[in-house]
Length: 175
Image (spheres, one colour):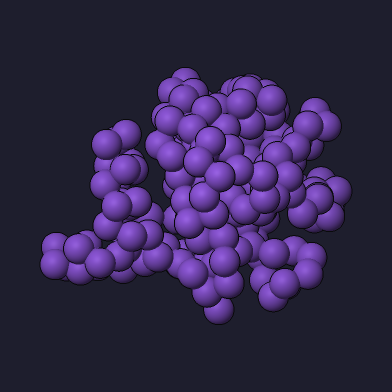
C-alpha cells in the first residue's frame, strides 16, 4: 500500500549520469521534508561524522578528500575507520553492503556496491540530522513517469521545489 508522506517529490541519482562512466540509477522519492531541509541535514551529518558520501564541495570541514566515501571510480569500499565512524552514529554499513561480511573482513573494509542499498544509506545518513525524515519510492502511472525520467544529474534534485545538492553520490560503486 502506498502512503503519501508529504507530497514533496525528489530524485536521488547515484553514479554518473553525465561524463565519467555514464552509469547511474535515479530514484524518484516522495518525502515529508523539503529538499532544503534534506540538504541542510545532509551537510550537518557530513560535518558531524567527518565523512561525506558525495563528491564535489567538502561539507565535512576537514578539506580531506579521503573522507569522501565511494566518490572515485571503482572505489566502493569503506575503511574500518569509516565503518566505526558510521557505527558511532547508528549506521551499520554492513546493512548496506549486499554482501555477507565476515567479522574478520571488517578489519579491512566494507563493500558498498548495490545502488538501491546505497540509496537507503543516503536516506539514513540524512536521518542522522533529520530523524523525522520519511522517504518512500514514488509510484506513477506510465504517462506521469516520463516527466521524471530526465531530471538533473545532481545528487538530490527537487522535483516539486527547485533546490538541489550538486555533486554526485556513489560514483565508485559502478564498474
